[in-house]
Length: 333
Ligand SMILES: [Zn+2]
Image (cartoon, protein in one colour):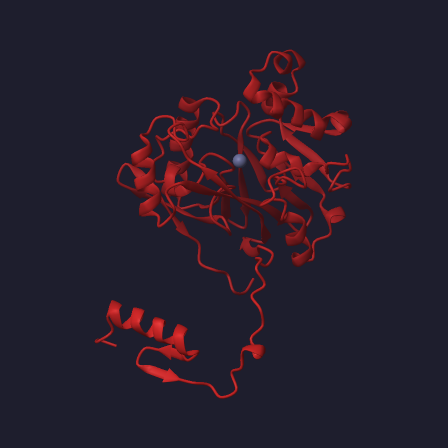
């Protein structure tokens, strides 16, 4: 092992590729009968992204909706230079031309309710999204078993999956629950009519999603326990009514950060950076500091909608920013 060098590794890899042999550190074995026909073809697609963990007695199922590769340019982070952003991506071992932005919703089984927080795109998003249905099937959760759909804010990656393109509710038995200030902002017809071009699509989508059942949509306030064990936390800035959630069960806690930060390798690391999606950048920045500081100080486990799957971990102070420390895989629940 001590003689292992980069050249040795590259050399054995090249030899293996050339000879059809399996090479490992100092050991070369040619398996008999390894004809090409015995090798199954690569599937070319990912398996459903589902992961379970416990918070007290609550069972959380994290469901990926997919990943969006967003090309970055000078405006992606409003108040940082493109070079600094690229350096942060390189430091996280990521490509520097485009940011992978994952989407992860959670379903919480409290023992009394089965609650989904945010819904992904449903079938209305980019082709790389829309994976939650496959995840639910893999997890053995029937869409009609969801009792509550709780929404953090009205951006399409969080609400479009409430309703399919054909107009059908995807979770037909669920009570849909939304932050009061978010509803007040996006469902205001005068504001929708006067919206800048860049926001018109979001206003229209909020109407598509909630309009047909508007009278049945429950609105909650910040500080309110939305469902037993799940409290809405004031977190404006990303949008006017943007909401985080505190889950509590048996003295265990999860802070669902929603979009308090976008991808952590940029915005947990640099909480003063303002992503272009933050509607009020300064307010989002102060919300981000408040909640990341709370998570770090109280050593709370967190979830983040745009964190790498399974989108949960801890927040540690690091210089002027923070680090996301992934949570240990829970092999048994
Ligand atoms: Zn989002």
